[in-house]
Image (cartoon, rainbow, N blue to C red; front, top):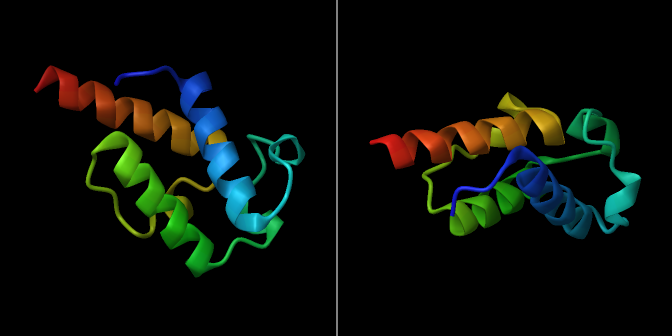
Length: 86
């Protein structure tokens, strides 16, 4: 299930938008999650959903460590590529 950054950016955007109860297109992939009022409950939910989708073990602090949609998508792709390589 190794998809590209654009694919994961859209997945992340959709997950965050669902949790924040906003339309996905209102989220800028380069804007920090905190600028949208992201809290720990939303961050935990999104990281859990991403774990389910990727089958990766992800830290609960994921959205704080990779604070934009683009940064998080790049991280997911790199982790999936490492998983394929191992």
